[in-house]
Length: 109
Image (cartoon, rainbow, N blue to C red; front, side):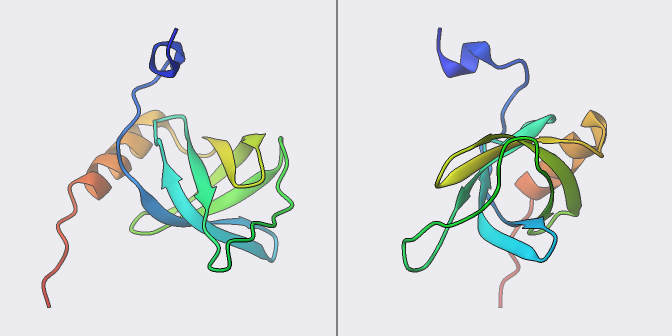
């Protein structure tokens, strides 16, 4: 069974810059594989080193470029990425935000 077949929610092919925040600590990266229930985040560090203290069950805030800040709980964590489930937003609202972000047209200079 593929990962797609195991998922209970449609994933949006959209990557957004984001910061995962826990208190004063903030780590930047790309939020990907976004659905109405959660997303994965791959950390991006200019020097190639990835150091974070996030662990499963941590409650964090995601500051997402072009969207609002969303509260989330970490459901998986590795050296270079985390997976989260959204905790303070209903599915209709996150779908509307995702679709608006997906349809954004960059402004010309």
